[in-house]
Length: 356
Ligand code: SAM
Ligand code: DTB
Ligand code: SF4
Image 1: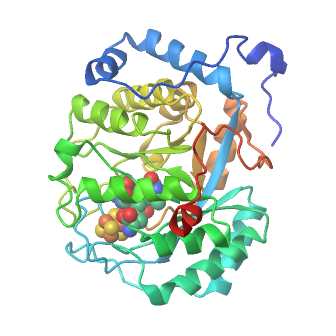
Image 2 (image 1 turned 135 degrees about the vertical axis):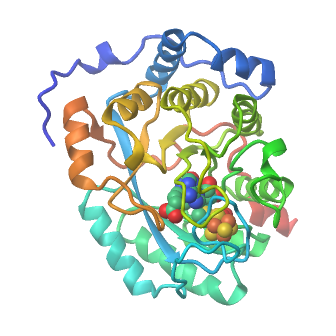
Image 3 (image 1 turned 45 degrees about the horizontal axis):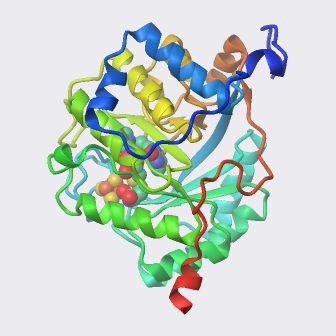
């Protein structure tokens, strides 16, 4: 899409400053110090960090598909798909591989470079793995990046997904460790971190973030970002979701987060994890163009495109095209370099470890 915005050349829009060193030793006080900066100072700092590693006018586009919807045994308080809540969602079986590939083809034609497949599972069953592997292989063959989010994974599952060529695994920590038990009781924070460690060890790229607007405080948001940034290696992708309040879930009436606080969360994530793609994820249908523009200025550089997320609505391509044109944003082309911004130690082989 051509835009009416006059472009600066690359040298003018990319900072000449060296990219900041990656830190993994954040304290809560450090993070709250960022959160509590005057808004203009916080945004200036986030945009400066962003420009040291990224083109500020490019946004990566991912498309989501729910490959297995509803009837989930977990009790995540935000989720439309939990069997513990009466949300009226119709459960369905695992989709057929051909249908998934047909949907991915459409998403590619609409400009998505990454296809993210999500299943309402606590963890995959062994009998489902062949189908899931075929989905990864089929979508990859289209020339798209692949991402899956299937719940907790065993070492065997991870090896199968890695060997199928899976690029990213999404597994969110959702919130702070302290607030977590108010939201989910059927699996622990430690379970989540364990799956993340296994994914990291396998060489599959890590996509992990959380949700804001679940009634948590600024300390919880700070702690969540601290947990992510203090992992041995930062996640390559950090989705920041604004709660989509689903009728029938315990969080149906959660107090909405102030949009400025949401933008602050994006900015702090950008500063703490300078090389990660920070995704402005769920909740965009409730955001004004201005809020989204501030999120991009604060360093968000990835979105979900299309008119649905997993079960909830998303703005859709017409709205997003208009927003991109207004802001002079362009879609980021697929980076053919398989390891663009990887930190040392990101691709230790699980297979190798298991063989020794
Ligand atoms: N069942 C798998 C799991 O939970 O690990 C994968 C799918 S799950 C829907 C993926 C993530 O989507 C959740 O961890 C949560 O962060 C996000 N999510 C789910 N429902 C949401 C909602 N109503 N609003 C915002 N984010 C949501
Ligand atoms: C993530 O962090 N957000 C996506 C993806 N990872 C799987 C999911 C958002 C779900 C929003 C609610 C729904 O569609 O049901
Ligand atoms: Fe199940 Fe995932 Fe929803 Fe939790 S977030 S209820 S694990 S589908």
